[in-house]
Image (cartoon, rainbow over all chains, first blue to last red; front, side, top):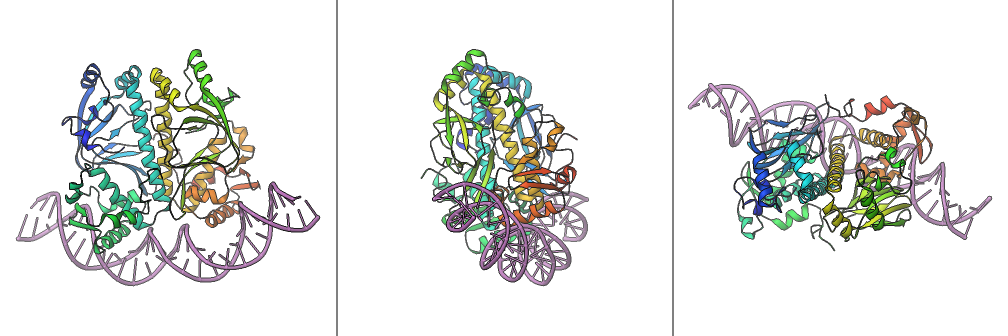
Length: 244
Length: 244
DNA sequence: AATTTTCCTTGATATAGATCAAATCATGAC
DNA sequence: GTCATGATTTGATCTATATCAAGGAAAATT
């Protein structure tokens, strides 16, 4: 799901009230949700959920970064999603997940017990509708990533990854182009996200620094210096997927 | 979404009544859906929807096979989904799709105008819930495919693809193992689905024939001779992703 | 400050799968 | 039945990326 930092700002407490389920909630519905709400914290590196875990709650990510990953028996791993603040974890109507959720940085979740949450959905169609939309958004992201994994070159993968970070971290203002962006993952994690090895990630990132497309102030903070070049390097249509 | 051929059999007319939205519909709700229903046919090779098309209807695939695909400017294409009978096309709450839907064989769709369909959802929460479940099912499939595209070898990809066809075409009975299965795609299409080239698909399929894992009676019909070997070749956990 | 650990870089080499090229095989059209 | 068109097979070669290996830089821990 796309982060909508603007709407998140409306609520310093819990973004779920604005983005995930509550955009059209009445005061009484918000009250009910408020009562279900609890918080959980995880340290960087902690597993949040393992594959096969029973899902006893659904949650909204309030702070930090987490990854969704799948691992094969021999250790090969593929990340299948990246969770940033305001993203939603959970499968209403499903008891289990079949991937791991891991905290990359310290993470705070705003949790709702699954059962009462599902009961609430039954009586509030607009929440169910919102959940359909969110699931479809995620599906679009997953499919975009399938194109990346199946057909893009290493360079295009890295460029697309950076481009995505820009999209998800910008508040929309042009001013923000000047601010440093956060690279929330190690290069090994990026590799697992892009279906590459860490060496290839290092080499490609190195090349993009040399070519003056991006600039790193330190390992975790960077700026896009040449945005048009970045966009071209993604291999995507320049129109960004909008209608012709 | 997984094909559920068993439930499809309950209705020779339109599978959507049983699978996609109507499992828990009351007679009056079914009547309303009946009134919205129209059929559309497409010839093999016809585009059903182009990227950027306005979605005026949602639909259930009644007959045939269709693919969801993304194409880059330079012609590289990646399939992001395969539609078999009883699968659902459409994005309630979304006006556009950002991939192409193409009929691989002759296709019959059972269509519902999007607007009235969405209005109906508003008043029937269980349909919305069903749609959430379907979207989450699709998401699981997409993520499984991300692992395949990002980390599996050519051999594992082909084996997984065959394995998936078996899963989706079997009615569940052991007897069916004896019957021939349909390979609905050309090798080029398989390549685009697996992020490979057609030559690699041909070579790997050839090898699996030689090794006696599969047997082709003709180009489009095959049997799995050595199912355990197939399963091992997929690279997946033998427990099939069930809980530990 | 020293030490350990984790992360990143760089080089040399190997290889799976892509690419290029040509037959051969089906299948439907006429 | 012949032709034409697309689908498949097979071989030779190439190349992007993986793999193996080692050193260096930053961050965390003592």
